[in-house]
Length: 417
Image (cartoon, rainbow, N blue to C red; front, side, top):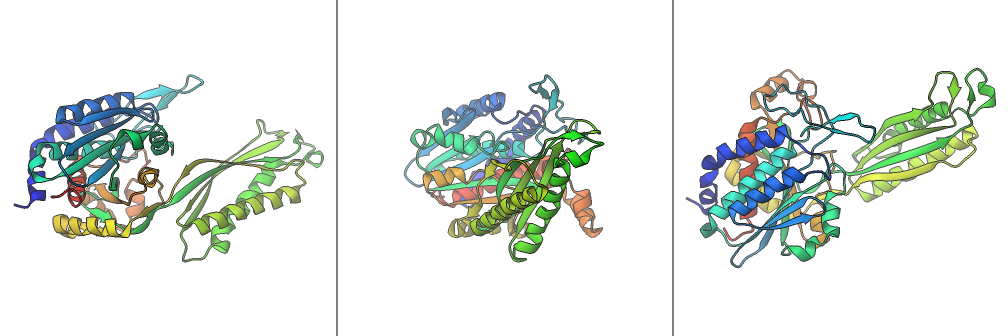
């Protein structure tokens, strides 16, 4: 039996508590920057396993450190926040939790992105390394990050002195559950997740009565023209070989049918895989907005504000190659090359702060039979719920076993196994 097999020998034994932990975490999710109970449950488990716990870091972040002789230091990361999405899965352990907004209205919460899978898998891996210290050497840093969905959780941990509070890692590893068949593990060198930028654009008109449009400058028409023009940036200004996405997610103006407002607010989201493409798109957006405002006779310059920005996730080729070889050896044909994902993450802020290489991979979470039926019918996009959908619900197994094993197999490549 290889040393990796020895590390994974306790996988069956730990399955019961991992499944119970996952169900409870899924049932009681917490939003970004509010992961207090989640953090406590994680800290308690890590202490039970024998880890030195560093917490809180960056608000509600938790780090477990297990030193086990000489060798390299590996950082494994899981994000732990949930989304303001009402769950519609029909599961017996579905979330019915809510919080309240500033107006006192109820806000539903669910783990519609699968971060509960990430937390449970990392805790499972942490236990296996702690239970089998004779089979590896080095230092394991198990990092549980808050507020990934808010785009600033990793940066807040760094700003809170993460680099001075934990051993400096030699490599960082992370994963995400995705709408692929459960049991599969996908890697990809180079850019794997896009950079993301959200923009809030305010354009100004001149308000007035809906019956006298000649006395106004209508920001609704102005906003609509901007939306149409923006849709031409990717199709006409970005090379077909470059992947880019521009979405106008919101256009808001006015309060009443017979009142022409004095301003409109657009919210945009960009996804890009290179700095050059990102800069070209932002320049084009500024040009289009300014030109349409000028053409409409807007009385004030438009205002453009950036928010919810995510860095590019650009996997180190050598690190990714090592992990991919280990996955092929362990998972066989279930290991595959992950397509580029237009989703975005802030994970890379952590290794970038340490100046270390990293790789980030995907694990499947969809029932394999369900996926096979949808694929055969050519209905994967129609029938398979994706992350952030109210119906997104990874099957518990083999998803949790695969997520736990993937972290162990990947970390073992660097921990003297």
